[in-house]
Length: 178
Image (cartoon, rainbow, N blue to C red; front, side, top):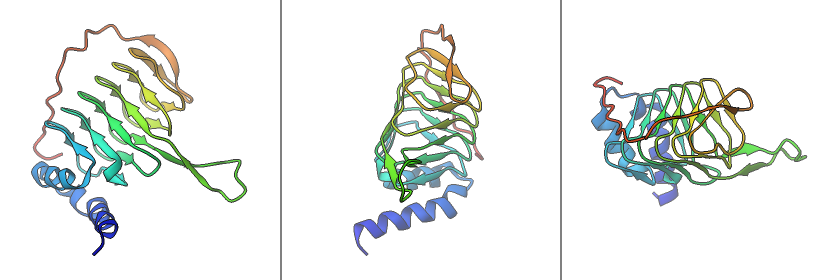
């Protein structure tokens, strides 16, 4: 089997089976072989879907909660250290061009810097950088870059405040059956 076919097989097995196994050790071992990088302490809950996982990089102690989608098809998805991504959030690096007559796709990488907190049901679109320590409120749609320490909300996401935090915490989330 060619390397490309093996990557697809691993991705498909993750999305339909392994990602639903209630053992964090089994999921971690699978992700370690599949992702571009899985740093120490990074945690991925059950029911997370990945696309082109070799383009996905998870930093130390970052947490991807249940039912998220991580997309590496349109470019690298870089998630730094101590990032908390809430349940049912979708991070896209590939989208369709609404002005293309053939419905072609276009892609761009996404970068999420240290200590970012993304609440539940957030959508992040291609080409976005979310700055260090930013907070994205539940249900927001992030269409453009977010400044460091900004708190954004809405669709499209707009600044609603600033975070006042020294950002010295280190996430340590390892539930037994998630």
